Amino acid sequence: MQTPFHLNGKTVLVTGASSGIGRKAAIDCSTFGARMVLTGRNVERLNETLSQLSGEGHLVLPCDLLDEKAITAFAKEIPALDGVVHCAGLVKPFPIAFLNAAKLNEIIHTNFYAPALLTAALFKAKKISDGASLVFLSSISGQFPGKGNVMYASSKAALEAFAKTVAAEYVGRNIRSNCISPAMVKTPMYDYSSEGLFEEAMNEHVSKYPLGVGYPEDVANAIIFFLSPASRWITGVNLYMDGGFLLSN
Ligand SMILES: NC(=O)c1ccc[n+]([C@@H]2O[C@H](COP(=O)([O-])OP(=O)(O)OC[C@H]3O[C@@H](n4cnc5c(N)ncnc54)[C@H](OP(=O)(O)O)[C@@H]3O)[C@@H](O)[C@H]2O)c1
Image (cartoon, rainbow, N blue to C red):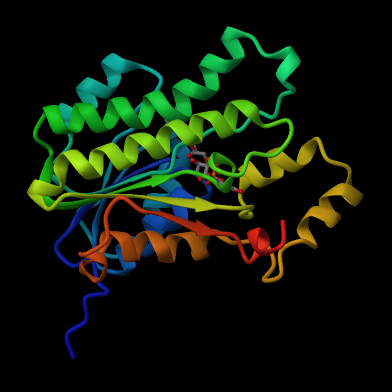
């Protein structure tokens, strides 16, 4: 039986492939048949991801996505792509009254400028093939911000607008662009986010997820769907994945 739920013959770039959701997405995409291009800054952890991939022909191309010149060089070096998964991201909770430009820049650069500039550079270098699928990792906080996370929430809201604009500009080439917005997923970022919370407050937060908190494989499954022919009619959407959290919060 032929199934549209596959990535056979596709070359897919994953940013943030050295950790968490990006790592799991890269591993699982390779299981579904994709040739992977992995990027991040930490070469050792990227190679750990590489060692867990199925199939052959995968590449590791490290890049600091805060460096615009490095992004341009990266886009020239990379092979033509059928999929891009923008997972690289940073969270730094901070109360509004203590904001300053340096703090804001770090988050906005990582979560918004980096995926936006990388997307622009890949299009400019003609590395996004017709029919490709772009997936941007946002967060439920992009539309449902919580106290203390203004920089992260704002950067993700901007990213969502960007992803939708890409969908509108490139639909004529059958290029699709969608967001995935998870609530809490157990990754190193989750551990960092919970550092400031006392155990009791964390347990209370987690109790608000009727289906429990998420795991990287939950998000990887949605990423595979968005990259595969099974989602060929879907563009410009934002998929919330929250274990039921938003039903009653
Ligand atoms: N975990 C959650 O609860 C959650 C919830 C909602 C949304 N998200 C979103 O999902 C995405 C993945 O999150 P995660 O939990 O998997 O995070 P993570 O485990 O902390 O991984 C973050 C990744 O981003 C990369 N990165 C950060 N700054 C970079 C830079 N300047 N240049 C290149 N790469 C950079 C890191 O690479 P290096 O370490 O190699 O630099 C790392 O691979 C993020 O966009 C996040 O906002 C996560």
